[in-house]
Amino acid sequence: MSLYNTKKSKEEILNLYDQKLNCLQINYQYLTVSTNFGNTNIITCGEDTNSPIILLHGSNACAPLALETYYELIPHFKIYAIDILAQPNKSDETRLNIKDDSYGKWIHEIINYLQIENVTLAGFSFGGLVILKTLEVDENKINKVYLSAPAYIVNGNPFKAIFKVFIPMKKYIKTKKIQYLEKFLKGVFSEKDPFALTFLSKVLPNFKMDFTPVPTINKQKADSIKTPIVLFAAENDIMFPGKKMIQKAKKIFPSLKSYQLFKNSNHVFNKINNNIVCDIIIKDKTNH
Image 1 (cartoon, rainbow, N blue to C red):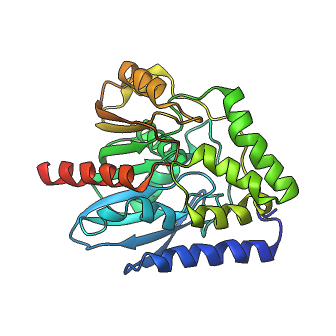
Image 2: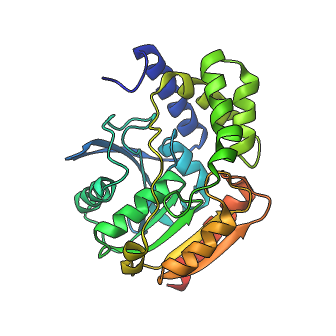
């Protein structure tokens, strides 16, 4: 069973994927890694001699969007932007269990295949959950992680999320009326993003999303993580509220090195805040 409603809708979504990647005007290569969980598409760019970094996008997204988010890193790192499985992208459609350690095992298969050591991980939203699951499984080859509005630490008020995110989304899926999609985007994005409007107008009605409630990491697992964590949270994040996230992270992660709360920011950061994240990652690398 495909996660796409039709073959045509899959083609349209993957055409938008290519458009976004071409707009970035970068020299890149595709790499397909065969794992026990499915074939995984990776976009690689940057000099081979640079330190390796793995980038992980959020849900209903793809690797070109991660490359756009972390664009400033390209001259400084050897980049591996991964298409997360079972998302609207070029990896296989195998849906992993969000509650067990499958995502962590999957990333380790990729790291082993790439034969990289001392790798940095950076991810947004659902990508943050994947990163934390990776640390739970094994952290030997990972030197530092950067989490932007990550899932898996706290969840927001479900009623707020229902009214501001899920109802507009469901209404858009049902009616295809653009005002509902715009309302959904307004609740999630910090600034208008024309590509997100185009991409999600195709993805939401044509791609089967995973509505499993997002779990949160328990104190015992968080306590066992030794890898330095840098956390960026958004003050007005409906899904994963920033202040609540920072308070909890300070309590449960002994390896939390620093954190930043972006004021007046929704779940998806604006360009200025994404650049702040990149600047910190670059500065940490030069000071390493």
